[in-house]
Image 1: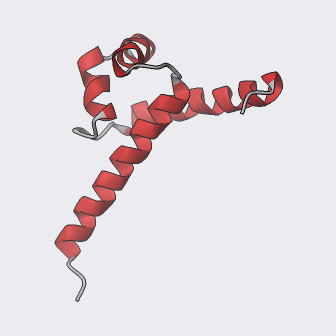
Image 2: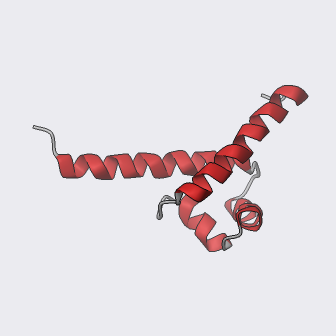
Length: 85
């Protein structure tokens, strides 16, 4: 039997993991701290908020999801132009 309460948590966790991966894609760097600083400046949030998103502790509002999607999308285009990945 399907546990509907568990399904919601699984979806929330998957969404948070997806957004964390998107942050890494949008702001490529080697450290979580550097990514948090870079993203915080662009998104006008605190580095701590970005760290919470990276560690899947909090959900991001649609405003931030859309902004990061736009940045990551541009990064994909630049990767193709420059021949990266």
